Length: 103
Image (cartoon, rainbow, N blue to C red):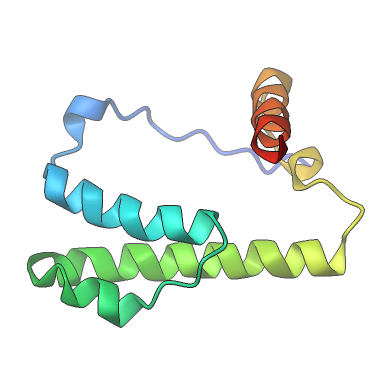
């Protein structure tokens, strides 16, 4: 069964957020991606002007990371990319980036 959904393309110019908001988002998510466990409340306290908008986005990022980690524990021999409905070229680019990161 194909669960692929088409989402409307969003051009970068259509996203109206400040550089400071993007920095706050990137700082937290970069820490998650690199295996750190940043404290959400501490991070949000540095950006009080964005708390209402940023909290649900970062909570979702935490949830995605936790689900991904659970998947890796439960299925250590399965590459999650094999389960995703995306072009093979995209999968190949991600795998290449993974290999470079390990080196």
